[in-house]
Length: 260
Image (cartoon, rainbow, N blue to C red; front, top):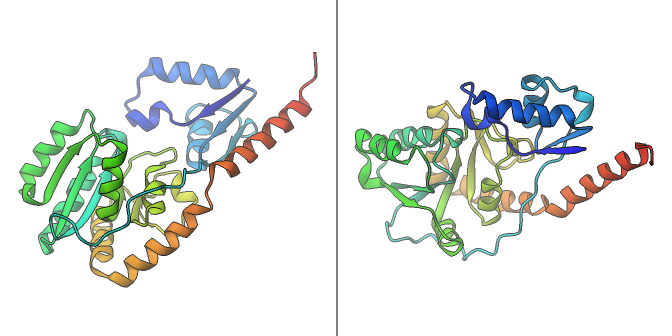
């Protein structure tokens, strides 16, 4: 029996876990002969939080589909630098840290616009926080976006931010970088293990996050370098490579398993 772990209850809920969900996950892991995790970040969680022996827990990173996005454009309806958060508006994704960083950037430069694309149980709380910070004129909520709408947003975005509190992997920044967008990502993510040309910050470090956003938005040389090298880097992270590694693992397991 092989179990694939793409997220755990600790990722979704922090330390305030649902014990029933946790127990179901733990039982599945206990029954497994091999546990495949999407990152070393998740592998560590499985070993330490679910008490699984390291010898049966392996990591195979995710890949990304090549993005057929609209051509990147420097122009947009705002005439300002667009910074985007794309994902579920939930605890795990750290939307409140995105809002806090936006407020810090806008304190020193109002020529930025922040867009939160997605839906989730923290959406109302985020709209209230934006109002409290008095940044509503430069902050927009789109709700869930269809694929074509998402492509258009990425075409106009200068900085993509993933401030996740606990992210087993995180494909969204790969999709953004594949589209030629510079990315700022949380160190508390699996995808940070495979990326060199993204700026990495701790999710809770609002100062570092806002500084990274401001620097990319205001320094064209930095932005161009991250966009160019990031796009090339992500092009090598294919699903075919992930599938080859998984196929090799399956074959190793099959060769070790006694035939009945």
